[in-house]
Amino acid sequence: MKHSRGTTAEQIAALPEQRAPAAPRDSDTDPKPTAKPRAKPQAKPKPKPRPKRDELDAAEEALTSLRAEFDRKKKDLAEREAALARDRRALEQARSSSIEAAEDALRGQKQAYEEAVRRWRASQE
Image 1 (cartoon, rainbow, N blue to C red):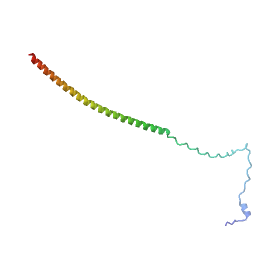
Image 2: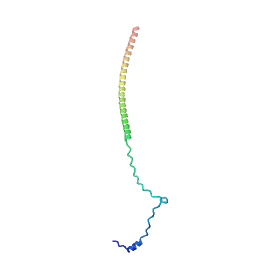
Image 3: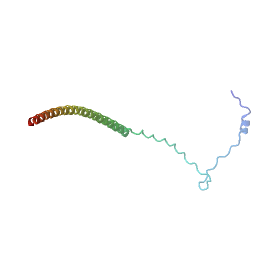
Image 4: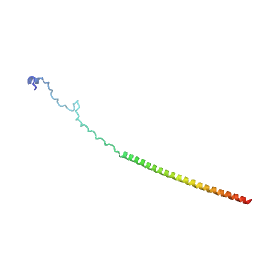
């Protein structure tokens, strides 16, 4: 518990002097600018929404579909090349056997002709 020291009169005498309240000033002669009312703190603006991925997704999808399309075309072309190679081999085999048969026929006809000419010459003597 606190005990006051001294009497009430002594304590009042020890208080510092109080100033009289200042008289309101006239606005025309007021050298101090009047205090502006405090502005409310501005609320932070709402953050912008995240950009949409629609265009990016569409571009990625287009790239994926183009790659798939060209891979399919490349596979089709490889299949056609393989078919053409098979056709070429078959044609080469057919050519080889046909030419060989024609050459055999030519040799046979040539021998037959030469034999006929030899007999004719023998008959002319």
